[in-house]
Length: 292
Length: 220
Image 1 (cartoon, rainbow over the protein chains, first blue to last red):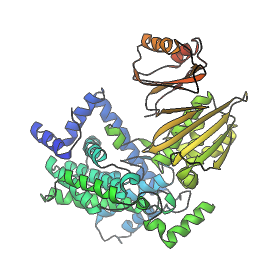
Image 2 (image 1 turned 180 degrees about the vertical axis):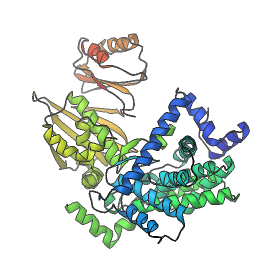
Image 3 (image 1 turned 90 degrees about the vertical axis):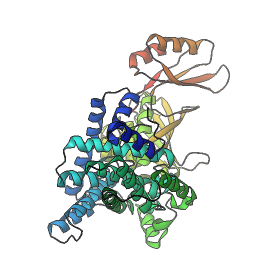
Image 4 (image 1 turned 180 degrees about the horizontal axis):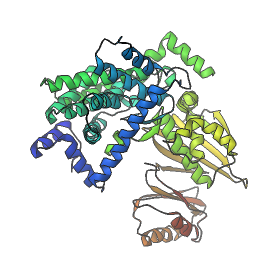
């Protein structure tokens, strides 16, 4: 039985058994949850299909959120790509587009997969569905990579937390980004150790990121932080696949994230009392939304 | 915690606590009412009160009262659906100390004029805690098959109920007893590891001194 106490223990076990992180997580969870591999794979596949639908919905939709703060940006990105105005290359701009699309669907009360939360739901589909499309990876492999993402996510949840209210945006979009990076490394044929480094890189880059939603809504800046979280995951995965190693071991990075989260004042943990929520414009928007 | 707490659940946005959790509270309120209420007064506290429109917390609670699941895409249209289905509603931005910041107090009336009250808090990630049923303070999260058994506080009621569950092969995961005062009205909250059925609830309800047995099915 795996206890999900550390990323390193997951990596050690995978290396020992000559398996991928996703394989040891799947086998362990099947036995713990008293379900067959097939049942778990089916349930995870349901998640993948909803992710795909959310991307399509987000790209087609013109709708705005109830507050009017979000909606329509994924479409703008897509048009920019079609018009050849994108400067980051096809893959990166697709990652941004898909992350925005899913996050906008969430803001507009559409159906998404919390991964790990609703506020950060665009990051994992943003990166993984783009890799799937560009490198023509089959669904089965992407479904497996989601077990890597969730296995590592469980360790982060246990040792640091994954909610903005507890740990700031680093815990929410940061965790999603770390999980996406690890899954991407596995999809690209990287080793379990590389997956661990990718988690470390993704988290290190957003350490201290605050949760400061305007009017307390999962919209500003959350939607755009999903785009940057997905891009951050791509950067982390690329470095890990190149063999670059994190000087600070991944489990110590997670502990540091917990300490930083604890040190953040309540005003920067989803209470809408600090950061962008506390700017003149942020406050004005909040007021006009409350008047609605 | 399992992998599907991390990748999942499938839900309608925008917020697991303010939307998905709110649907779950509404669903439990409907179960306690026993049927769809004809009207519901919903008092919102803390962040629920401040941000309910933007997060669709109002639509989510109504959707739950209508029996929808947290991944139902009709949630965004639930207010209109409620009116068509003959369920009136009223939202009140309330204020009370000592309640969790994301709390809803739902007072429902059914066709016969019977009133039921449920208070629940959304504690993050779509997880909830129900903290009041009618006049009795309770605490359960709806993650298990849960029986709510209001009964008259008298010797042997618990033994008879648990014996019946054992006969049906149900293992009790958690069990709590709450009462207003000795010999008064009391409530058992029993959470089981195995799926429970409405027939079992009916058999519990037939036990002497048991007022009612409400079965709440878990969602995820």
